[in-house]
Length: 121
Image (tube, rainbow, N blue to C red; front, side):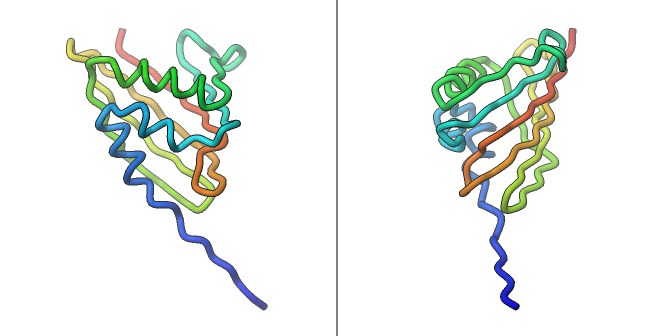
């Protein structure tokens, strides 16, 4: 019997892109037909915000990364075909945002991602 193991991808450039507010670097991690589903107070589970394809996802990431806020990736877990982490953000005025994300990977790219986010009032 032959066992083939695949190493988890090195996601350091993804983390650096998120923490460095580099939307282009983060967008490079998405497959052309990727789907990103966001659930938050404005987009409940019954009506989530869905971004499909790299153009829509890159536009969202460019917007988020252009905001004056810090991003810190924590609780990172990576396997050959899955990715999960929390993202702790703080706006310049002190408002905090917490995002939990899980994603499916294929050939080292994100193909499907679900993000749950909450923020201070």
